[in-house]
Each structure stands twice: as C-alpha cells, then as structure tokens.
Amino acid sequence: MFITRYIKEVWGAVKSLTTGMKRTLYYFTHHKEIITEQYPDNRDTLVLPDRFKGEVVMPHNESNEHRCTGCTACELACPNGTIKVITRFDITPEGKKKKAIDKLVYHLELCTMCGLCIEACPSDAIKMAQTFEHSVFDRNKLTKVLNNPDSKIMEGVE
Amino acid sequence: MWSFSYIANEIHEWLSKTFNPTWTLIIEMVLAGVAVIGLFAVLGLILVIMERKVSAWIQIRLGPNRVGPKGMMQSMADTVKLMVKEGLTPTGADKIMFNVAPVIAMIVAMLLLAPIAFAKNFQLWDLNIGVLYVSCVSSLMVISILMAGWSSNNKYSLLGAMRSGAQIVSYELSAGLSILTIIVFTGDLQMSKIIASQKTGWWIFKGHIPALIAFITFLIAVTAETNRAPFDLAEAESELTAGFHTEYSGMKFALFFLAEYVNVFIVCAIGATLFLGGWMPFHISTWTGFNHVMDYIPSSIWFFGKTFFLIFVIMWFRWTFPRLRIDQLLNLEWKYLLPISMINLLVATLMAMMGWHF
Image 1 (spheres, helix red, strand yellow):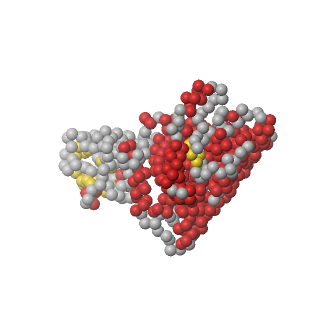
Image 2: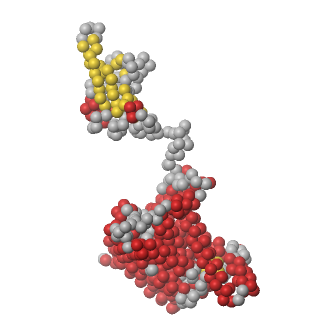
C-alpha cells in the first residue's frame, strides 16, 4: 500500500542517515586514527607503503652484477618512451656473441610511474624505488643511466 | 547570577545621567551597532576555524595546524589575506547591483540579529512579533543571492542563484511550519515570552514527539535555507565553480562568506530559542535543588552552548552527507518534509487544545 511504503521510505532514510552520522561522529571523537602525513616534519620517520612508486631503479648485488639481459621488453612496454636500452654484444669465453646492455637510459622527467616496465621485465632486473624528492635545478640530471659503470650480468640469468 | 544585562543596565544608567534621553538613545543605538559588527567579526573567526577543525576530524585529518597554537590563528591569517586582496568588478557586470549584493547579505544578517535574546534580559529589540519578523526577514537572504547571480553576467552565477531561489522558496515552507508548531504550544510570537514559557522544561521535551519531529524538520529546512551542504546546490563547486559568488573576490567575497556563517549562527540561535529554551537553564519541573544548581550557570553560557551545539550538528550534516541533485532536493521538500510537517502541525494543535503537553 502507498502509505506503508511511504513510511518505510522515510524510516529507511532516517536509519541510513543516522548510520552515516554515527560513523562520522566516531571519527570525530577518535583522533588517533589520523591519516595525514606531516611530511617535512616527519622526514626521518616517514614510512611509505610497499606499493609506492617513486622511480625506476636497477638493483645491483655486492659484486656489481645486475639481472638485465638487454631484451628491451621494458622499452617496448613503456607508453611514452621513458626507457632506452642501448645494447652491445659481448664475446663469451667459448667464442660466442652474447647480447648485453651497454646503458639502460631512464628519463625520469618523462616517467608517469605506471610500472608497466616492471611488469614486462622477464628477469626482475628493475624495480620501483621509494624515493620521491626528485626536484633538481638542472634538467639533465633527470636523465639517468640505471646500470652501474662496469657492471656485468649476474650468472645464470638468461 | 552574573549576566550581560548588568553591563547593559550600567551603561544605560550612566548614559541617562550624563546625556539627555535623545542622545542616550542615539549613543545606545551606535553602541549596539558596534557590538553587532564586533559579534560578526568574532563569529566569522570562530566559525571558520571551527568548521575547518570539525571537517578535518570527521575526515580523519588534522586540519590547519601551522598558524598559532594548534592552528587556531588560521582564520586571522585568512582574514588578512582577504582584506589585502583586490576586490575586482568584472567589466561585463552590472556595477551597482554587483557591489550592493554582498552588503545586502550582511544587512539581512544584521536585521535578523535584532530579536535574538543572547542572555537573560539582554536583547536588542523585544518586539511582539519576534518569530514572524525573523521568518520574514530571513527570506530576504535570497535577494542578495539573486542579485549577485544576475549582476555577475556569468552563466554559472545565474544558474546558482536560480537554484538558490527555488530552494529557499521551497524550504521556507517547512521551516515556517515547524516554527508554527512551537508557536501553537506557546501561543505567543514574542521571543521573551517563548523563552519564559520554557521555564519548566524545554519544548523539545515538553512537546513530546511533535516537537521532536518539528525540531528535525527545522534543522533540515534551515540547513537548506542557509545554502549549506548537503543542500549547497547554489554553490556546487563541482558543477558551477562557486555558484553565485564565482565572480567575487577580496572583501566582497569575504562578506558573502561571513554572511553564510552569520546566517548559520542566527538560524541556530532561533532553533535554540524555540526548541531548546534559549538562555533558559535546564530545568526539570519539580526538582528545585537541581534547578537551583542549573541557575548558577550564567544564561549567556546556556544560550551560546546550545547555539554552538546546533552549529556543530549542522557542520556534522555538511561533512557526512553527499550533495542532493536538484530534483531530489525538491522531492525531499514537497513530497516528504511538507506533508510530514503539516500532519505534525495538526497533531501539535490537537495536543495544545487538549493540554496534553506538560
């Protein structure tokens, strides 16, 4: 019937609005749950979540070895030409030619932190670092070479 | 008990001893004007910081915390910023109307302050049709909004102003009907008599369920009348940039901003007067000891406490509910609030006739 539906509607509205108001009153009276980061003040104790994407880096182990095979999958995956892989051919002791990277050039100023390169990488050679204070006065400093000088590919990474 | 009325009486006595009656009246009027402007300035500062802190805590944020202790001087800094900014008048605007609109908003707010009793025997003008006066003058608020929207020569401003017109015309009805419920119980329009009738208990308790329903209707309607969220269609940042005050800057914008907060204060003061007893302390009819203890709290603290509680409730609404669409807004008024408050008024009239309230 019309009138019962009407009363039900009003009652339902009042109930759902009070539920919302109860929730916000809870937040209002519990100040411990504050989610704001007091950034420049808490720089020393700042904890970023794992999923935070700051910039692309290539981890190296202690004997200056990385995992990059120079397959250029990251370059192909990048939507805006941020990564440029410059490859060279090494001669192995057996006398075979083997593809390796000379430089992995990364343009931070073009990067949108989408993370597609990291997903595309078959050998987990690159990952996202949690640094985020990227401002510099010279634009050239934003063009980075990710592999260390004289670094080699790790044994067993194909 | 200590009260504002002692200060007022002493000033009055000193003035009547020193000057003749005409000059006394003129000086008293000037003093009242200065006091009203001072109250507006203080209210603006307090309510802006209160709004920002309440919204921050409701949204699990910290809010302003840089200027002064715990950020409490933030609104001072904002005021200075707004005062030194340029008050621009657009070339295409209707110059006179554009510049007069914010002043009218303030004048309406000032006029509304006249019949409000701030403390025991402390009232600017205790006219015998106080409530009627308030409900009439408060509908003038829409004129300043329409003027601002029309004279800006901007489609967003005009749309915002027109929405505001539709909204205020609709919500005046249920605000008026919920005020009438209390008038039916008291049988008087004078503010001081309405407060005096709540000596044995506030109307929200004495009037049983009809008073409670009227109170809720009143709160919803005045939230809509002051153009605050969830009924802020006149501003609607996401659709109309800033609605009727899109083209305003500097001090002219500040006047609109101040008028909004002062209007919130005024409607909450009226709500506190009608439903929560104004400056009347919390009395339970036969407990004389308890009533006596309550009388020791100054009447101005009771009044401002109740008013600020209602202001908090309205802020709580603003930061909890999503904005209504224009058709939902009009549906809420014409299909729900108006029929409910009409039936409520009938029930209240029956109760008043039979004497069923306390």
